[in-house]
Image (cartoon, rainbow, N blue to C red; front, side, top):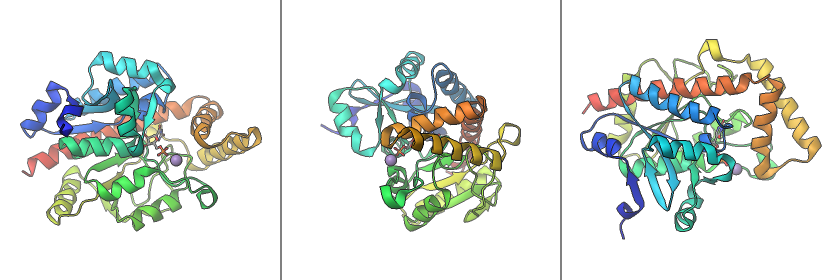
Length: 307
Ligand code: PSU
Ligand code: MN
C-alpha cells in the first residue's frame, strides 16, 4: 500500500495544492495539549480564519481514525478540541503506532512538518517550537522538532520556542543541525510571551517576499532542511520579558517542590504560568499564534507568486 492509502486530505486543501494556491499547515498538539477547552477550539477556528483573511487555505493536521488528516472539518476540529489531553501527542516516533491503533492524536511541530512535506505544503504556522529543556545537560530532554527542522524542507513560523525551554541551548542545537534562524522584523530571537531575548538571530528580514526568496534559494541548492522564522508577539499582547521570566522561574520552583517531572511537567508549568499571570499567558499565546498565521499566509502567497 502506498502512502496515499493513509492520507485523508480535505477537498479544499487538495484542490488548492493541485492548483498551486497558497496553503498554510497548522499543528494540532497546540489544540489537544497546549490550551484548555473551549479556548483551544476558539483559537483553532480563529487561526484558520486569519490564514484565509491573508489569502491562503488553512490545513490543520491531526491523526484520526487511522489516517493522516490534512484539512479538518468543523466537526472534527471540535472533537479534537474536546478530546484535549485524552488525545495522544504524536511526535515523529509515534506516528506509525498511532495509525495502527486508530487513536486520535494531536501532531507536534515535528510530525506536522513531516505530513505537510508529504502532501507538498511548504509553510507552517505554530506558536512555539519544541527545543532544548532547561537542565537538558542532565535529562537529555531535547525535542524531536529540532531534528525535523534539519531534515524536512518546511518553513516554520513561530514566536520563539516554548516559554519553559532554554533559548541559548535551543539556538545552539539549531546551529548544529544547520537550520537557518530568521528574525522577522527583529534582531533578537523572541521569547514566546515576550518580544525580546538577549540572543541575536542569524538574519533579519522585513517582508514576506524576502522570506520566500530564501526558501526558494535553499530549495534550488537542493538543501533538505527547513527554515525557522521567528516572529515576535505583537506589542499590545506581549508580556514584559523580566516579568514573564520571573513567573516561569516561580512555576519551575513550584514543580520541583511538588515533585512534578517528565511528561507531566509541561502541562503543569503552562497551567501554573496561567495562574501566576492571572490568565494573561493564555491570551498572549492565542494572539501570537494568530499573528504567526497571518505572516505565514503572506509568505505562502509570496512563495506561490514566485512560480
Ligand atoms: N509550545 C507551546 N505549547 C505546545 C507546544 C509548543 O507553547 O503545546 C507543542 C508543539 O506541538 C511542539 C511540542 O511541537 O509541544 C513539542 O513537544 P516535545 O517537547 O515533547 O517534542
Ligand atoms: Mn521532550
